[in-house]
Image (cartoon, rainbow, N blue to C red; front, side, top):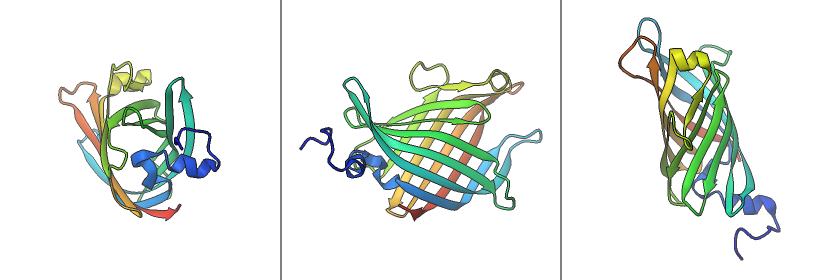
Length: 196
């Protein structure tokens, strides 16, 4: 049976069509996070904990294109504080035909990123990227951030270690007003599965 035929068990059909995203379905937590962000006095390193929920979804049909993916939400807190400092909402999608992994998301600072990378369906690691100005896999910011802290490049490396742990390294390259060199705003964490 073609996996794109109408499923008899929708949940099983979705999971069988997530490609390299399959192991990520579920709820994850990690307290090994390291964030390096800009400040008036230079880079500041902060330690954080994080919770990510990945909910399988699909199919999403764009004419001949059929996508499956994960609806996701992320919240991060400093290790020594109960008030979150970062949130994201978005989607991780898999295009089986083109072997593309796509992550589209928005953060409340009013930045939207649509990043893409290529991977085999059974890959345990993959890299995504986006560039400002791209009409497809690009970056949009609010007018204030576009002037003061413009994200010009975005790179994400994901490594799935086993069925119960994965890690990521993220680099958002910022053009800060008045500075010639790009600032590498980086985040990394290793997360463990809480539930499927």
